[in-house]
Image 1 (cartoon, rainbow, N blue to C red):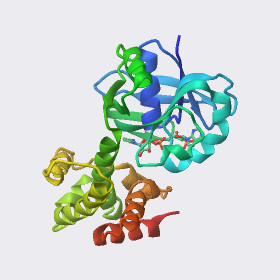
Image 2 (spheres, rainbow, N blue to C red; image 1 turned 90 degrees about the vertical axis):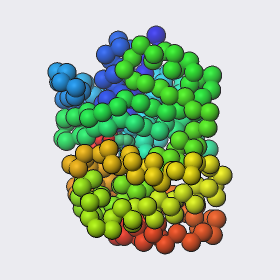
Image 3 (cartoon, rainbow, N blue to C red; image 1 turned 45 degrees about the vertical axis):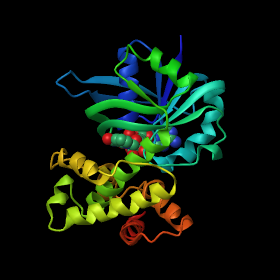
Length: 284
Ligand code: NAP
């Protein structure tokens, strides 16, 4: 039986572990300490409790390890990885943003594009919607998808994951930046001029993506604005909550990553530069 591990008992990790456990998979949820997480699956299903094992105590080598910590928390997990994976293990980074996977000392590592919406508050996770991970298609991920077909965790395979990663980066660039800096939920889009600002910001990001060789439909900005229009006013983003809770932001892996790429391509990106600099001022 495939042994699944999930590092990071937060909104994303607990949802993954819950869905695997519901399908009777062999799964262990690992965190910074032994504890129990209350999990509200949403859709009027009853709440449940999931056990969390201190990652330092885990000795098992997992066949598939999902890592669902915030992007800046990955370095701390790397110290524990040696004990948790073997030669043939698959490691799936279930986190937002972009990083160069070639720099990680992991043989079979995949960047997932995460469509799971939820929030952690203390030891309680509330799941709002979706349980989808997009992954690059290859023999390993095809087998994984097959194994998880009977679970509520949906794997979508992509022929070019780079485009999917960039699409999510641009979606996050717009809404995460203005909810965080505007100090409000998706309601912030109703402020006069905010939609224009968001469109300019995404356009800066789009030009960087294009310079990186990523092709999008000409309707991309309208498409992203349509996605935002579907958000309830009270919906926050992770960067909004992180800034509110004075937590470290994932800015280096979203806005910062696009900013660095813009410099490499010698592009002028005034909206991105302004937003990125203001976000850096909030970094703790
Ligand atoms: P989260 O709720 O803050 O969960 C992160 C979890 O990782 C926390 O439980 C944290 O432990 C744990 N952790 C941190 N360092 C660790 C370590 N060294 N060893 C073990 N566990 C560790 O974050 P999230 O919202 O699930 O987000 C995870 C990633 O998914 C982020 O990149 C986020 O941007 C992305 N994402 C989130 C959503 C969403 O709706 N939440 C949607 C799409 C993508 P503590 O509890 O001790 O802090």
